[in-house]
Image 1 (cartoon, rainbow, N blue to C red):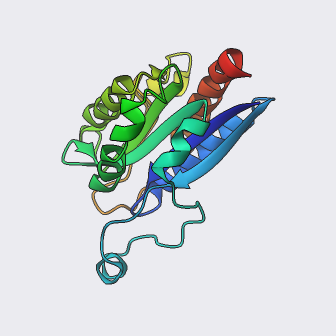
Image 2 (cartoon, rainbow, N blue to C red):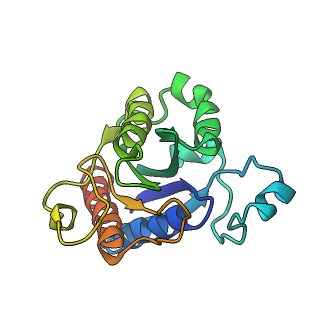
Length: 200
């Protein structure tokens, strides 16, 4: 049984929705299990509530120690000024011991993200997350163009060969579209299929 971890941080629920779709795609592969985990929120509870953070997320909080128990790790985080949210970076910055021991070498990895605008740093965020995965020795898998939805020009959609994405609008009012969620499911399934071949 290949084991997939979908590890995410979501402030307003956009990345949470994408993470659920990634996990759904991974679970659609027979012989694969997929767990959803989120990284700890660093913003004080009172400030988060005043700012409208979505605090009622069902996914358990992840620990660094559990990463080595998965065959594939797919990371999702919103974009902050062209890079991943500080909550995700803080969690990843605690994986030095895992890196030192080489515990993630040879596993499969991927990333997904969200931005407020079409050109708000999706690809720089994904590449930053991918760099971390590469430093850990993971084999990185993106969102290939066989997912044709990312080629759509009839509406604004997310999607990048580096990973699934969505666009939220500046006020956060746009939740992931069907195409965005389909891209997330596709990437989750694609990574799960590769992990199954490698570890199943």
